Image (cartoon, rainbow, N blue to C red; front, side):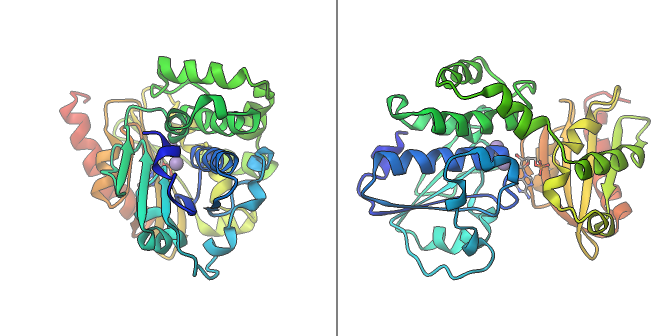
Amino acid sequence: MKIAEEVKDAGRIGIGGHIRPDGDCVGACMALYLYLRKVFPEKTVELFLEQPSEVFHCIKDIERIRTDVMKGGSCEEDFDVFIALDTAADRLGAAKPLFDRAGRTINIDHHISNKGCGTVNYIDPHASSTSELVFRVIEEEKLDEEIAKAIYIGIIHDTGVFRYSNTSPETLAIASRLVAFGFDFSEVIEKTFYEKTYVQTLLLGRALLESILIMDGKCMVSGIEKKTLDFYHADAKDLEGIVSQLNQTRDVECTIFMYQTGVLEYKVSLRSKGKVDVSRIAVYFGGGGHMRAAGCTMNGTFYDVVNNLTLHIERQLKKAGVE
Ligand code: AMP
Ligand code: MN
Ligand code: MN
């Protein structure tokens, strides 16, 4: 797919990504937004995303995102083309009506659980990130330092800085072409990926200390209650990275991390080292994701959620021959 070709007849182009946007979602959306505005200055291009974490404020024009609409503001606008990135339409949040009303829709994603929701779909579950797919659909000669930086940020976030198994030779080849544009990649990695606020460090500490091992040490479980988040004046953005840290524990095959989003409601993050397909489990509970990283929202108490998940994890571990 070449995105310039796909949108050439459109006067008004909308772009949206998933709720609670992560680094890949923000990077992919911003890169495509900057690119389309650069290539088609005569067109209207608008980006609809929930407020990204402030670590992403190093990306050019990020303040132009229409967070007003995502907070429940009016969305009277209609678009000739609406592009959903890093998700199917169901997780576009308040931008979903804009997608539904658009004359033509495009879906670009790398989630194995996404079957494609657009008039045109570009879904590649083997790609490291949606940002990598954005690199593929734009013309490299139109790239500049700011667009390259946004794509790079997306890739490092979904690959854990080229560490997870979704990193391919192509991912690294693309990264090398991106860093050639000259942005300070070392600072980008430090400031957007590794650096934590003090509150984030404290929450990580609590999640680690309060974690438990179940299934004979094969599964690690931890969670943060809403009252803890409120106490620290923290939100979901402050919990990024905790689940991966937990899952680094030796002999652990998979990790359940959850935070409370309401009365008897939890947002669940699942991670696997490869033997358990957590995407299958997340899809079963109405969510989605990848084989080794997936998520869903579940109802019940903390222990209800754990019990419901462990049934599926145990079954898969047994099948994989892990006792
Ligand atoms: P998280 O644990 O929230 O970091 O998510 C891990 C992966 O699963 C990411 O690629 C998410 O986009 C995806 N994911 C998380 N929650 C959902 C959901 N409810 N539906 C579909 N995909 C999800
Ligand atoms: Mn994402
Ligand atoms: Mn992604």
